[in-house]
Length: 158
Image (cartoon, rainbow, N blue to C red; front, side, top):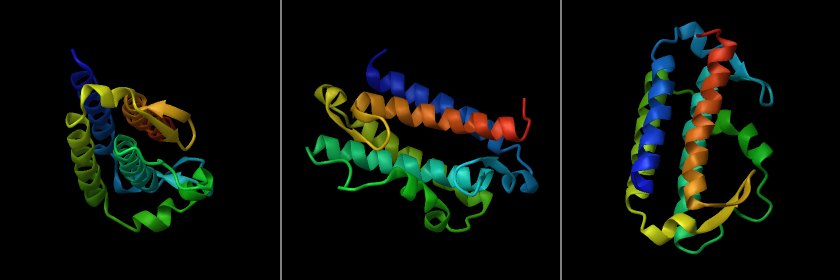
């Protein structure tokens, strides 16, 4: 299995696990606090954060491939995350699920367009420091699974 296949599968597996849980949430569960970032994020906010984050990481990968800096000077991840509710607005759960799908489609387009030498290019991630393009894809999948665990633990989903 080559790296494109490996990370396509890892992203698909993470997304499948997330959707299995999200598709079973009641309207009330979507609005329960599941993560303690700032003033507390609901499942709704956390899914918006996943969309927002994946978009941002995909943009960073694109910048790495173009030889550009990945983050603007003075970028503050805590401040960025604090603004997630304002950036995502008030989409319905169905709109969030569609947003997940659209964002992942764009992520996979980028992944499938990588040349072999792109995988080892590197850029500055906002919390992990300098990482390779391959590690960016690992981070996208891992980030999704980490927040899925937050949702499941908070809502006591087995």
